[in-house]
Image (cartoon, rainbow, N blue to C red):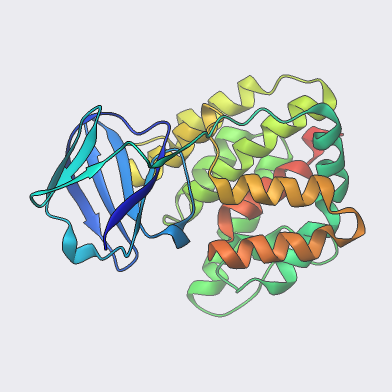
Length: 269
């Protein structure tokens, strides 16, 4: 039976129209705000609404969220009884320091498991980025160039270079912004200028790219990435294994790669 079991604390009330439909998730938009409908396996997030027994066919091209329920395809799903995911990310100093310490080991472990066209391929501390032919080699050059610019502090340029790759760049850069928040706690620094430069360079009109960057800017974190941070801050010598488990559970490595890359970047020195 289709049942609303979780909704993010940043989901706005209003009438939403279909943006895009996939096998595991449906994206809706209302006034520039994103709503992601999916199964529990998608993980909780600030803009996610998760349903037990989810099927994309059970949702029409519009839906409405009121203070009491969500209405879709003539059916009503009460908000009462659904868990509200609290997305605010406010890491403590000690946990942040431990996560930064674990970052180099985790970067090498994640990179070793990544495919050639994943940003995770390029964050290792012990070897160069992925190599390949055709598209993979073009991706490699652009990714390595963008990450080099980020390391040098040329954040707007680096973000624009990565944005040219399309697709997963928004997730990687959102992860990087979340990581900067951890570094601010760990090192007592303020990286708001870097945050603004990246956001200005990449926050375009595409809502699927803009939404994760907006959430990262506002320190509203998805549960999977919070779990990765917890693994890094509490995993000790086994942090790498726990981080890989979190990434496999999420099915996406690019946001995690951006997060880990930021923690191991020169900004944390």
